[in-house]
Image 1 (cartoon, rainbow, N blue to C red):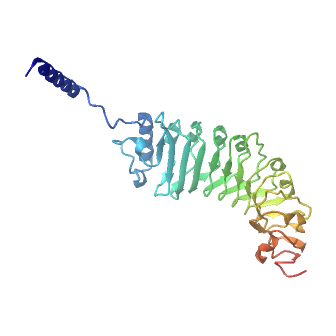
Image 2 (image 1 turned 180 degrees about the horizontal axis):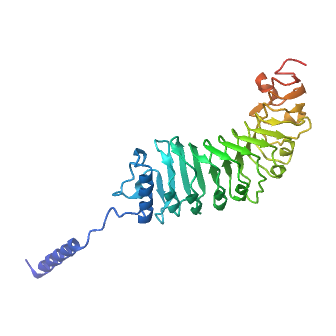
Image 3 (image 1 turned 30 degrees about the horizontal axis):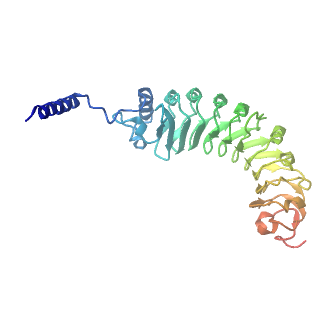
Amino acid sequence: MNAAATTTTLLLTLSLFLFLSLPTPSLSAERCNPNDKKVLLEIKQSFGNPYLLASWVSTNDCCDWYQVECDPTTNRIISLTIFAGNLSRQIPAAVGNLPYLQTLVFRKLSNLTGTIPSAIAKLTHLMMVRLSYTNLTGPVPTFFAQLKNLTFLDLSFNDLTGSIPPELGQLTNLDAIHLDRNKLTGLIPEWIFTGVVPDIYLSHNQLTGPIPKSFGYYNYTTLDFSRNMLSGDLSFMFGSNKTVQIVDFSQNMFGFNLSNVVFPASLTSLDLNHNKIFGSLPEELTPLDFQYLNVSYNRLCGKIPVGGKLQSFDATSYFHNQCLCGAPLPAC
């Protein structure tokens, strides 16, 4: 072997030796923040180590666990979504120790009990809270008003009691609020919205009294106040300048003259059944592109206006009124 070949062989051998001597990079470096991981394991333990959280194993990267999501840049836990499973006990206060959480969901967990923990108030980055279809009890907490980044608040299908906190009107970024299907009582508060005007769902509660006049100042997309014990005049909620699309005020005790109410062109669904509304159906209903209409079980009189979508609904949309007549009801 000549000198050049010998030198080349020595260099290759040395390079191989150096390469093999280098520390092997880890192919499974853990992304999960250790503090977040510790908190999640505390939450799992608080729930009694349920099967629903079986993937939460300390030897695995918590960014790979089910029901959680890490921020792709910081790797901090930003989402905790526990949904549809056998999970009992109360929401642990440890939830409040995930400081970068943006989404918090406990949903369709019928054995979840207790009150909504005040520790949630520490989660100032929260944008979405969905605590629904559980057996949570107690009041609607006022501390939600402190979470200024909230865009969606859903506390529906629970056993919450007490009145609706007026402080919730301070949530200037809220797109929708669901308090329906609870046991809430008292008056609807005067909510003064200074930012986004949210869609509001208050149905299936035990709310009483009139709708505050302040609600008439705003434009909504959806309002559902059905199945309460609300009363008074609703006419101020409508008008040609409004943009509401879906309205359900059914099964209450509202009483007012419908004859001269001006409905917005945006309206596609109107449900006023089972109230004490009187007068006649205005002709201005005929140009509207209704997908749903129900004014049954009221005290309306006169002929149903002809035109538009009004005759496309069957008699059940109009029956059980005082003297309403014309198609699809019998002729006047």
